Length: 137
Image (cartoon, rainbow, N blue to C red; front, side, top):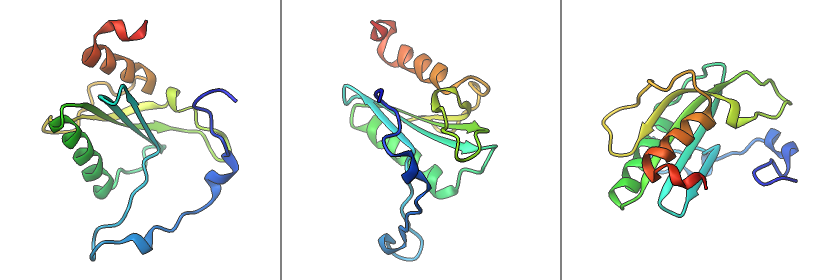
C-alpha cells in the first residue's frame, strides 16, 4: 500500500451517526475528508463534493474557524472545496478533483480564482506562496 492510499475502502460505505455528539440545539459535528500539515505550520483541508454538491453552512463556518484560528496561532491554513464525478464504489483520486472554492485563513471570504485547476495544482501553488518554492526539494 502506498502512503495516502485508503486503508480500508470498504469502511467508507459505513455510515457514522454523530447525533449523540450534538452541543445545544444547533451545533453538530462535521467530518473532514482530508487534513494534512507540513511541519505543523502549514495546514490544508480538502473536502471533495460529488458533482457540485453544496457546502453546508456548518461546514463552511467550521473550515473558516479552523483556518482563521491556525493563522492567529502563527500557522498558515488553506481549505479547498473540490468537485469530482467518481461514482461509488470507485475510489476518488482527490489530487485530480477540480477546485471550486478556496479559503485562506485570515482572509475575509471564500475565493474562486483557482476554480478549474486540480486540487494538487492549487495545493502546490499555495505551498509555493506560503513556504517558497524550495519546499519541493
